[in-house]
Amino acid sequence: MKDSRRLFSRLFALPLLLAGALLLGGCASTIRSEISAINKMPAELAGKSYHVARYQGQESSLEFDYYAGLVGTYMQARGLRPAAAGSADLMVFLRYAVEQRTEYLPTPLWGPTGYFGGTTVIVGGRPVFVPSYTPMYGVTGVAYTPALVNRRSFGLDIVGKDSSPEKPNKLYEGTVASEGYNANVLQVVPVMIQALFTHWPGPPQVL
Image 1 (spheres, rainbow, N blue to C red):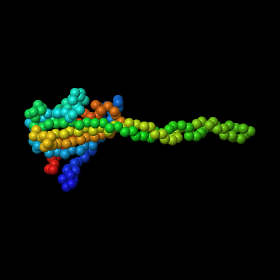
Image 2 (tube, rainbow, N blue to C red):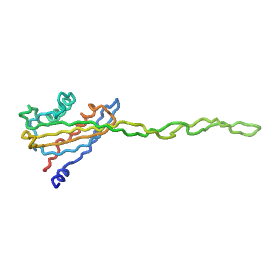
Image 3 (cartoon, helix red, strand yellow):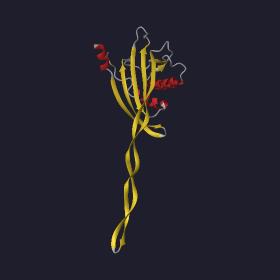
Image 4 (spheres, rainbow, N blue to C red):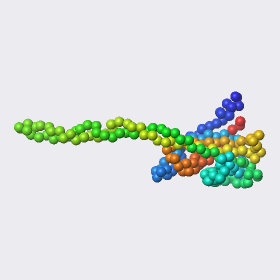
């Protein structure tokens, strides 16, 4: 239990608002990402080699290939180089998923709220007000419209080349998550990967 508490204490969340414009459905928008990461990576990464491997179920996935290419670009920008699985210093694995839920958004209802207007005429030498009953319009109530919310997550796991199923040597575990109404994951995940690598790998933790 003590070790579990220590591990949890090293887990940090980094809210990050990407102010860059992203075209979502034809409109400029921003994505707020929450990042959690645990890092035991070597202090010097330049010159290390890596290989992006697949979890079971990711075989023959073009979506995986797309994300793996983005991750590789960021890792190479930090001085790492790609290598074959048998010779790489670091084995990199990707996790990604989308969960959906329905929430109800308030929508104002518009309609007549009363009447106003009229004119004054002289009848028998006396002014008489004649109303015209012109309708006034405004908010008359609230309706609740269902909207589908997408909970998107992307994770990066890195293990050392000496790792095995019996004795895993995990060096990095990071997850970035965001929520929004845009269902086009291929537009959103690249921004989440960018957020993950903004401060990657981050300060090391001694676990």
